[in-house]
Length: 228
Image (cartoon, rainbow, N blue to C red; front, side, top):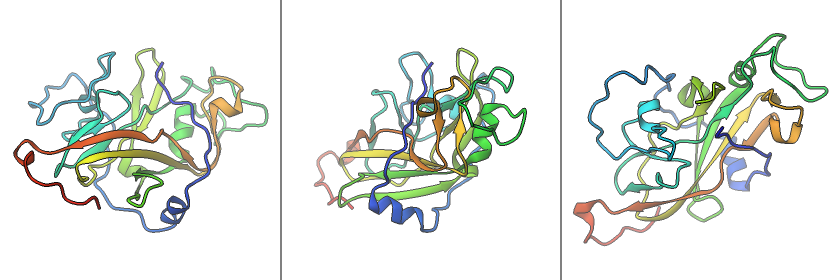
């Protein structure tokens, strides 16, 4: 089952400062709908994992996606793009959940995925982290969190999928995702707090995934603008 194993990380100073500021507004996110519904002809190449999972189709995203598959690491100058992650999967229900000693879900009988959804506050997307070009965008739960999803082996999961992000300049960039939770959450798979729980506060949800912004075909001969 594809799912990230997340560790709490010290926040870079610029990110910590940004998280104290106002969130960037964006259209609200919606839960995935029927994947069997007819799809319009794609405007951009779709992000498809090696196992056939289609990020654009499942999440109904029209823009290019930068995501976990290495095949989804290219976008074009002057075009908005969307950041996807592997998401967070949990045990199926409260009855099958196994928790570390001392952990208590939000309320008795709540399914682990609903516990995660209830504690999810926001997601933060950082471009070019740790460089002079670092930029940070934070979105509230209703703007990013996709819920009601199920893995191929039957486990429920939720995924913070960004709204369309502004185009970047031509060259190599990185994208790092953090999430903020209101309280500790454990996924119910095993009683290992380090591997199966997320602490309250802001934690790193992805690596510093590198991707390329390429010139649009008609701009191929134009000089590049300085990176903002």
